[in-house]
Image 1 (cartoon, rainbow, N blue to C red):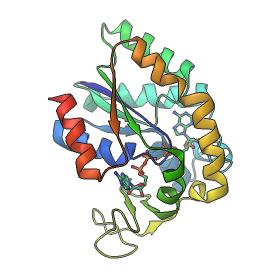
Image 2 (cartoon, rainbow, N blue to C red):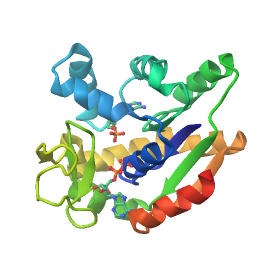
Image 3 (cartoon, protein in one colour):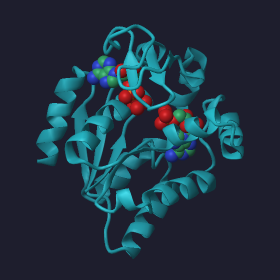
Image 4 (cartoon, protein in one colour):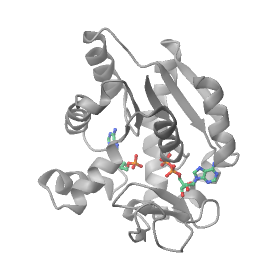
Length: 213
Ligand code: ADP
Ligand code: AMP
């Protein structure tokens, strides 16, 4: 099963993708997590990606597509995966589509998690992320058991550099310009499913389970 998560930054794609991955035993592939791991490890890729990420811009398609295709070619992805944060542009979606078509397959579900812009800033300023295992929490809506510490791996939680309000505003603009058109792209392919992302995380997941069962 190949699933694409769509939605604005902060809509809850990562939160839901993790649950889908666990339930269906498929990898959660987040291009944002891959970039952040590279930044943490000080790689050349990380240095390049950080320039764009810190400004709220997208990392160029060519680089992003290369990273993603390498990742999904790995053995653990052979029975499917849930993509979180990719594709983010029409050219990225087209490359994914043509690479999958070569293998005689395609995206099975594109799940759009709908959250109005007004809710996004609050979500991002309260988001706390574990840069080690990729888990995300929210100070009010989804707190970790011990403040500032990841429930999964015990690492320190941080406010991401790109979650500061001025960067979030830019990321929302970029989303509306470059990523939102993917809703029509996947609708035209007949695989688009929409869920209300404003309800509690457990209820969003219930709606997704209904779609996938
Ligand atoms: P995305 O991957 O789409 O950028 P996240 O999954 O990281 O978004 O969620 C953004 C923030 O909102 C996180 O702090 C997360 O804990 C919180 N969050 C996720 N889903 C919900 C929800 N349904 N209601 C309230 N807060 C949520
Ligand atoms: P995310 O973790 O999905 O919120 O992504 C954080 C940042 O990483 C984005 O704001 C972009 O700068 C970059 N990024 C992640 N995925 C992509 C992608 N598919 N295309 C371009 N840039 C991306």
